[in-house]
Image (tube, rainbow, N blue to C red; front, side, top):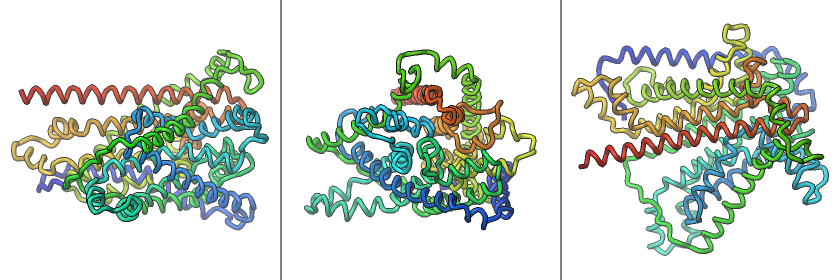
Length: 540
């Protein structure tokens, strides 16, 4: 698949070396510093504290349960979208992805608004005490993680070949036997990958447990409190190493279970025939889950304009003006600047890394690929602590640059793999033809490669931007009063029980991300329309 050409690669080899050095400084050395910090910790004292083993057990228990619910729900939703003719699937799919546009702590806050001691649904249903603790974390973690699991499973089902199912129908196999003989073997390896990825997301998250966990402490919350509250970096290193273990397992599973099927075979799409009960059932499921997703977001908007939740729900503009007076406008500007810088830098570096590892015969391509996907195994909360310990005292510490760097590394692997897969599907002889015609590689990239991967580039840009806007994990340890992104104000207002202000901040992040998504969709539509007109003109 890679283009092989003798000579002329010295500059590209040097670029690969520089990128490998960049990842060495930005990923490997901070993690080694984190591991070294564990040697300074008193392990006996740490694990003698009953809060620590209890926190580990709580994290494992709630993460296992939430992963099971989230993956099952995601599989059901992916089936409803890809295997039925339910009406409004485009709208439902957009609504199902809305939770990915707000921080995880906002999901916990939405549950507090609905199911807290004075929540709307708590009062309506006569529930006392709220759902703080295990059940609150479980529900919030499912809301936070199921859209990612859904995207992964939906992509798997979308590209499944219908030919074996047609053969099974001809042979008279029942649906249940078809499921066990065809569907389950097809889903087995990808499903393991999805389960581990979802588990890692949940077990390393501290936003939902911090907001609605109450006395039910999980390990990331304990780590956050120890590092932020007591500045105990040695103890935080131990907790970070523990949280790194499930992420490392997920990383290994991802490497071995990734779907490596090529695009060189003919795939038949499923021809979906109308089925009244199937389609109505799918519509009901999609509508119910979409409502469960939208209602907490609607609560943010309602709470933003409430005079004093829950005592006085009359309309007011005071919460907005008060939040802005506390610096929300400046912090929002910080977030947008960070997100734009991360999106531009991350997209450019990810494209360059993918091009070097897929399209060029450089030395050390495998090593560069490994460095590019390493961040898949590093949770944000662990990466942030590693950066504190490694970069403290350096010229970038306490500046906007370190926030841009940590977010770029934190979210790098997924966009890189998007471009890696896209470039791998292009004709492997493009560069050879260009060299024969005397066309330079840079011109080939500009005139051929970039136009054919422009949709992927836009998706990469959106991924970096959206995640940088809403992240609270890595940046929580690195931001200061001048560089703080607006997402961290949710933590601040939650601690001060100013839920109205926290709701307004969550709404701000959601609106900015929605605007970016709409802009990306408009640009993609415009480019597709222009390409169609160009193709039609060439045909004429």
